[in-house]
Image 1 (tube, rainbow, N blue to C red):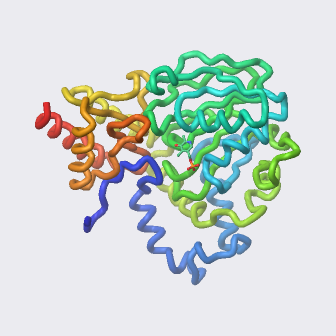
Image 2 (cartoon, helix red, strand yellow; image 1 turned 60 degrees about the horizontal axis):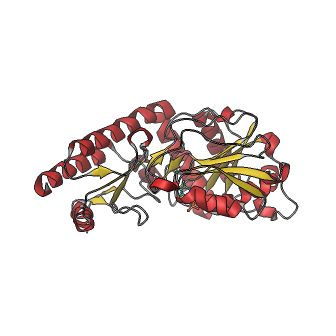
Length: 360
Ligand SMILES: *Cc1c(COP(=O)(O)O)cnc(C)c1O
């Protein structure tokens, strides 16, 4: 039992900024003099319409999303977009190319194969997804090229945006969205489940270039067609109101951190601190190739599964929680998203150094 907040290294859902939780707490029974909680409001009410419009605007500004991109707030998680992406885009030429760099991109690829001619543009499966391929093989007539920007389970991250000519880029940014500035105009579609870096589970952000909307295959379920969602401004049915409200508060918090340039500096400093300490130890090794290491999910292990288990359980007792790695990689994983305070990473570094001294 803890009588104060712990440092939660969970891969997702994950930490939210304390200031955001406290503000939501203050407003939980009576939002802005409305006499009710945001959870209780009609999505058609004036009060919620204002929250929605402001959140969308704040998010557009934060990510510098150009006006020729639609922002959709959807449900079904990132995984629902594994189907929506081919259904909305593959009809253009019947072909799509996928980069397989981890579990989620592989699931997306398997799903896409149901809808057309799908090729593997590159893969890191030969080394248990411990690296990011440096070249991609994209067919010029592919409807789109798909990749996952940050591989949550394996702890690798694309440090470059693949060059695909006129083939639209589709990127799953679930575990890196708003962790650094990106040039949205290079992408056809960016999407992300919000529960890693932005909000509670329940809202999925889809940022789609407007000219790519309206190409859905005839079999596309109504709710998976981005045109239905764009025409209804994400309110064809009830949107995830509470999550959208929290997302707005997180956008405010990110602006206070200096926007995405500011949070990038903090994120890079946290990751560097942790990797430097790990590299300095005798007993720990990182899963990811050095040049492809993720700033969001740090995967590492000792030579012994028993020692890994001991590490995770002793860390847990000290309020360093959820450090056990995913079963596909083993070892440990520290997810250090936007909301993980620098002090949390410092405390983890101290713990790693002490553990190394004791067990080397
Ligand atoms: C967590 C995650 C997903 C799955 O998200 P859901 O919202 O649970 O469907 C997909 N892609 C990446 C990169 C993730 O980190």
